Each structure stands twice: as structure tokens, then as C-alpha cells.
Image (cartoon, rainbow, N blue to C red):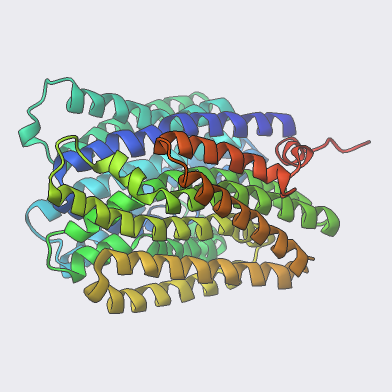
Length: 494
């Protein structure tokens, strides 16, 4: 079982590393280049607005179902029909909430209302796909689950690739609705495939809704659902506030989205690391010594990956933004806009580093069941985020929103570390943190020195990256055997 789980994680990582960066850096970037910052910024604000209420579509059902089916495969047939009907009711509740709240936020007419409709529909479809995948996870259909985790994105890439580059579609008529509709088609096909797989393993389905049963699920899952909601708010509300607080038709939200794109790509990878850590932390919590070593090793891996990415993006911020967004026939206005992206970008990459560290200590606290403490921290993050953004966005625009993101992610990461250390009695001393600082300082020094060389910046970037990867082992932040032990745990002796 353990080997099968590890193989699935590696397969899942491989598929996501192959597909999702191409979607974010290829398709999504090209869509923004065509739409422009104002139209794309409005789309991004509506997308993030719809995502804020995503937890209403689930309320813990997916996690409960995965555990229940894993404990007894017969629960698939027993619960599937009733949970499906409850999911439909939650979809209706979600639609009502986003349209009512959206109405009072000003998303009540024209293109904004259409965008909200399509964003909401896609969130509902995605929630059903994740619910169906939870049945596969419970049945240990790991390979099918991994393929479905990227299947919708592969289809959307094919559809959008044809739209953008085939020459069959008039680009002068292209708008964000087309982009959302392509994703809708991909979600519907993926949903049909997932449903086919699940129904093959279900016999004698019952479609009786047991509201008492749902009430019990809700009672058990409410703390986790609240945590997801609060984290969604303080992690994704910036584009919404930029679009609402500034009368610029979404331009600053578009600027923020361009700088955020690499943050999003990196976060997808860091989040997969948390998926791997959760069961490992849960299995290791009883052994204090092993837990302490696992926490340090996993945190070192995150610091190594996120630290190198953050520091190199800070030093090469201008070059990276120019590579991604500066057209060949650039005007002075284009150069000025890219300069604004480059001002936002390094701040967000600092935020990415802080967020990545929460995938260790936050995941550890989740595995320990410390949801009350995590909710308090997340609630503080929401309060700080909204208060700061109300102050800084009108004065500093997207740069102010990025600074707020960095502040909130740093505070929540630090509080989660303090909670984990106190609750689980982690033995992490000052000497350990000094080691981390030495590694980060080494990476910064190497990147700075290489950047002074009179060579093409891409060549310098590759050289600096290679040396920095070597610094992971040179500074003894990690040893190869520790990485192997993290990915392939030792079998317990009889």
C-alpha cells in the first residue's frame, strides 16, 4: 500500500509539472496578452470572487467521502446517490450566494454578470469532478485519479490552442467568455469520464437523501470548511479589491495578475508537496523524534526550492517580465508597463516563499487536528488583509496589494510555526535557523555575483541556478539520503 501511494504521488507530481505550468505560462499568459490588462483584470477579479465561496460547494463532503469509501468500498453505493443530491443542492446555494453578494458588489450587469455566470458554472463543475475523484481515491484507483487531475487542463489546452493559434477563429472578437467556455467544455467531458469510471464500481445505488447524515458530516467538517474559506479570502481577494476600489476598469488588477502568474505556477508545485506530507505527518505524529526530523527535512526541501526561486526572481525580475510580456515591437508605453509588472513581481515572490513554508507547519497542524488554532490564525490573516488593502490600494495600487499579500503570508506563516512548535513540542533551535539564513544568503550572493558577469542573462540565470542547486548540498541544508528518505520512507521492520 505504501509503495503504491508513493508511486501515485510521483506520477501525480510528474503530470502536474508537465501540464499546469504550460497552462499558466503558455495559454493563460497568451490570453491576457490578447485581452489586455483591463479586460483580463476584470476576468481575474470575477474568477477570484467566485472562488472565494467555493467551499459552499463542498462543506467537507469530498474529504468525508474519500475516507468513508476507503474504510469500506460498499459505502460508495450506499452514499453516492444521497451525496450527489446534496451536492446539487449546495450548487444551487452557491449560485444564489455569489449572485446575491455579486449584486451588492456591483457585478450585476453586462459583461461582468456574464463572466460571473460562467465562472460560477465552472466552479460547480469542478466541485463535482473533485467529488467523483474522491470516490476513486477511496477505491485506491490512484492511476485514474492522477490522470483525471490534469485531464481537464489537457483538454482546455487543446481547445484554447486551436482558438489562439490555428487561425480558424477571428481574434478581433476574442473575449474572456470564450476562455471560460473552453474550460467549461473541458470540465463537462472530464466530469462525464469520471462519472463513467465511478459508476462501473457502484452497484445498487440509493438516491435517498439523509439530511441527518449530512448534518453529521457538516458538524465534523465545519472547522475545516471555515479554514478553507478564510484562507481563500486572504490569499485571493487582492484582484477583487483592486477592481472594486479603483476606478480604472480593472487595469491594476491586470497588472497584479501578470506579476502573480509565476507565483501561481510555483504555488501549484508547492501545494502538491503538502499533499504528500499530510499522510506522512499523520502517520509520524506518535513518534516525537521521527516527527522532528521529518519536519526539519521537509521544511529544508521547501526552503531550498522556494528560496532559490524567490531570490533569483528578485534579481532577474526585469528580465523575466520582459521575456514574458514585452512584445517584439515594443513602444515606450510597453516598456513602462513591464517596469510596473517588475515592481510587483519580486514582492509577490516573497509572498510565495512565505506561503510555501505554511505547507509544512500548516499541514502539520492539520494532521494533528489543530483546526481551531489554524482558524484563529486564518481569521487574523483576513482581518489584516482587508484592513491593509483598504489603506494601501487607493494610494499604491497593485504594488500596495502585493505588499499586503507579503505581510499577511509572512504573519500567518510565522504564527503557524509558533503554534506547531508549542503544540507539538518541536525541537527547533536558533542554530537551525542560522543554517537556513546562511543558505539563503549564499544563494543571494551567488545570484548577485553571476549577474555582474558580462554574459547573456539567460546563460547567467542557468549558471546561477545550477550553482544554487549545488549550494543546497554544499551548505549541508540537505543530504541526498534525506531526500530519498522523504520520498521513499523506510519499511518498518517486523
